[in-house]
Amino acid sequence: MIIRPAASGDDDALWDILEPIIRSGETYALPRDWSRSQTLCFWHSPGHHVFIAEDGTSVVGTYFLSANHLGGGSHVANCGYATGQQFSGRGVASAMCVHSMELAASMGFTAMQFNFVVSSNARAVAAWKRHGFVIVGTLPTAFEHPILGFIDVYVMHRMLSSPDDSTSARLMTKKRSGLRADLFLGFLEIWWSCRGAAPRVRKAGLPLSPGSASNLS
Image: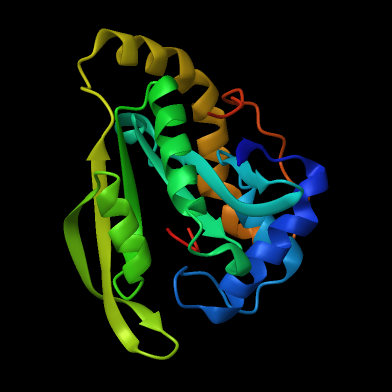
């Protein structure tokens, strides 16, 4: 399996992976009736650095990496993961998680946080725990599951390095200038652009690095 930055020619494969997840509405807090263009617009939001996992000639998964917040929170990374349904259980999500943590650390992020892990997604919760994430908070009845009704959501977190580490601090200082423009556009424009299916905004931030679940968020 290889993991590489996504290219424009990968959009069909991304949609094949993302559409069933969007339609099911069981793991991502996104509108179930989103179109292809709206879904891809979200996945390629300003500030999202998108990767795909390939096994032979098949695209088996995808993830995005971004900063979790602006300003004082920009040293913490955030990711969203999705695995093709037919490739579930083959370690795709695990490989993408490891890749994303290594990449985030190389970019100077000192921690990674998943803000909205649906509690019923037991496979995701177990996978993230295996990779060192811990549940640091529970949001009571924060997610309306289409079958189970209102259920809890977890915030999961793990450190990547010490915030005081000189190498991480130097890398993050260098990267923040590039992140700032992407994230500012992302937070202000994501909903407007996805609703209107506007053309993607060209990202001017961090360079994409070549790399080393089932809808895991």
